[in-house]
Structures are given as C-alpha cells and as structure tokens.
Length: 525
Image (tube, rainbow, N blue to C red; front, side, top):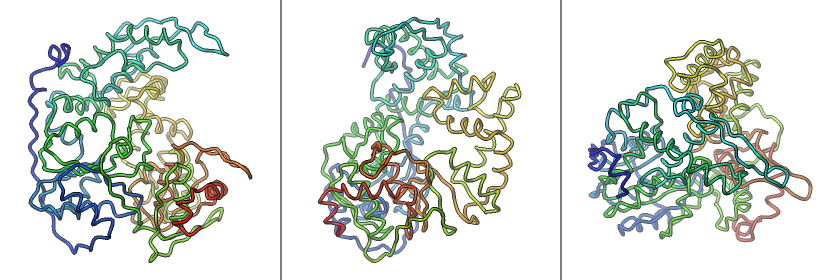
C-alpha cells in the first residue's frame, strides 16, 4: 500500500463489513427462453464471467431473471445504478438474489461520521479559495496560434481542486496524485505540469477533509463510494449481475474485477452509453470477455427497428437490432400530433418550455422528474436571488449569492444542479413555481415530457422526438457526434407503437442511405 494511504487512512478502512439480507419475492409464470436467451443461460451455468450485449427492448431483465432461475442454489446480487431500478428488480428475482446499488453497499460499510456529511452544506469554489488562501497564477494559454499570458483567478483554481478530487474518486487510484488535476487543454504543457504540482497540496487537503468526520463541510456520494472501494470489499455473492455496465466508471469496474471467487455477468448496450461526460468507460467494449447477444426486440416492430439500425450503423455497429415481427409499430413524420404519450427532449430547458406551453394550452401534463426536489430548489433559488441565505437545501446552502451558485455549476460537483440553475435563469422562479404546482401525476396525464437521459429504461406506446437534438444536415451530407447519436438511439427506442421522427426525419434518411450492408440485409432494405 502507498505510504500516504497507510499514514492518512483510518483503521476502519481496511476491515469492510457488508451484511446483506436477501428479500423474498413471489414467483410468477415464467416465459420460455428464446434461442438467444438460452445461450446466455448456458453461459451463466458455466460459472465464468461474461457479458450480455442487450439492445434496447430485447428483454434484458427477463434474461437476467432466467439466468438466476437456472442457478437457484447460488447466491446472486443484481447491481443497478439507480435505487428505483434496484427496488423494481427485487420483485422479479427469486429470494436468493439481492438487488442493490453500488452506493447502498458502500453506504452500509462507511462510518456514520462520513455519511452524515451528506446532509451538510457544500463548499463553493469562492469559499475554498479563501479558506485555502489560493492566489492568482499567471500561466500561458494558446490564443490565435501562439501562447499569451493568462491569469487564473483563485475561484477557478478552487474549481480545479474540487474537480480533481471528484475525478480521483471515479478512478481506481489508491490516493490523490497531481495527475488527477485535469487542467484546460489550451494551457502550455509545461504550465499544466507546474499547475498540477502547485495545486496538489490543496487537492490532498480537500480529499482528507472530505473523509474526516469532524470536518464540517458537505460531501457528495462519490466520497463514501471511493472509501468503500479503497477498503477492497468482497461482494457477498456467488455471482453478480451488473446492469447498465456501459455506464460504469473505472472505480466500479475495479471493484468487480477484484472479486476473485465471484462470477460477474456484465449486462448492457454499448450504444446506450450516454454518461461518458461523467467518466463512464463502457465495460461492454472494454472488457475482453466471452459474450452473448440479445438482438430481437420485445418492445417494437420492424419499422422502429429500421430507424434504430440507421442510427446504429452511424455508430459503426454491424450486428442489427431486429424488430419483433409479431408487433405492428410505425414511424410517423408529422410536425405535431395530438396523440402522444411522451415527448422526449434533449435538454431540461426545452422540457420546461414545453411544460409551460402545454399548461397554457390547458393540457394535463406530467414531467419525468422529481417534483418535490424541483420545488425545493426553486424556492431556495428565489431566496438566494433576494439576498437571503438558504439552510435547508444542501445543494444551495452556504452560498452568499446566485453568482456563487453559477461559479459552483462549473465544477464537477456542481454539474448535477447546472440544468436546474439554467431553468431558473431562463424562466424565473415565479413562473416555474406556478408550472410545477400544475403538473399532473404521471398516471393521469395526457402526456409526459422527459429528456432522453431521464427516459432511459422507460417505454411508452407513442413517442414524439423533439427538435432540440444537435446535428446539421443538408441534401448531401450530415454532421452529428457519436454522443448525440447514442442519445437519439435511446430516445427512438422508447416507443412501442408509434415514433414521430419529424424533427430528425432528414437526418434519419441520410443515415439510412449510409447503413452498412450487414444491417441493410437484416432489415430487408
């Protein structure tokens, strides 16, 4: 172990304990496995780690259930990123499978003194800069093909420090190092190295304060998760079903790869990786393991599958997604249709605009979001804008002004609240409050508005794709990033009966023309 680790880390870190009680579930009628599912089940029985590449709507959860049913005597653990998904999964697996999140496992093992810090207010970059006595630094940055002098101010330096700790927490490293500071690429390479060395003491201090129960500053969930990973925990299971493995970061993969006597079944879809900006590394592509595939959709028919394959082809996929021949689904190309169950946007701002417009029109609209959290945030934002301090909303506590919040948004820690801050800026607190008060519960709404990110894992009969996705298209050519293609793939595969692609129709036609031959043949083009 690194000298720093031995010196700085307390004794509890080296002796993790995870006590887990599996829940019981009722058994329902089980469907017969398809040919593809049977292969995955056989791979499961072999007891070796492998991956299941599962396209959108191809019965991933059912397949995992079948794998665990084929091994009733073995103790399993299903790991999801999200508490709601884990809770829902618990009702589908037999009593010998425990459904959890990485964070819930870590939370049980971390000392209460550390996890109690979750309730404390966070430190703003301005506060860190003042507390750590950071001074402006003159550096060289690239401007117009040559390097010019550039003064980096204390708040910006503090943001780099906070981001370095956040980045370290997502890695498999044992202790923070200068390399964890990710300096802007436009700085002179020598200055980047110097800046990393210069700020390293602050990075180390920020990390040690984060794990110190007696230090009165709030933390994010990544801190206790990192502590758990550092304790080299053993997951108490004979096999692990790791869902949405394409969204794993190096930390999570490191934990799973260190499980010596545990079979790990990585499940996911490389093309649904829409969290790369959070440091996800896409285990579905990275891990050199045997694989089985689920390629036939249970969610939609061949028309929607063809649309999805046009996107997959642009992502260099050669294995097609097959539509269910027994399901009738259609592609719609209309500017606006009354009959829709969900409108999927790219941005929170567009979702909110549609919400406000729908309410003005007298529609019963719902939002795929945490309304209570949104309300509390808007209330707190209103207080800050009036110059009043906030104490009961941790995300906005300790900030002296709305300007400080903006500054915090530019750090990794603050990336989660950045969309909310933009909503407040774009629409104002009072209109937002009025809109949120009028939101209809999901079960009673005429339609639901969601972002593609929030829609992941969900499905609706009739889906409308909004107009705020980022791409350029003309008669001969198009330009779109892989990140945007993956987002569109997620959005377009949420539909079961009809998919309105009016706003992306020209793009899809271009993509169809350039589809690889293997995809064309499979879908009869």
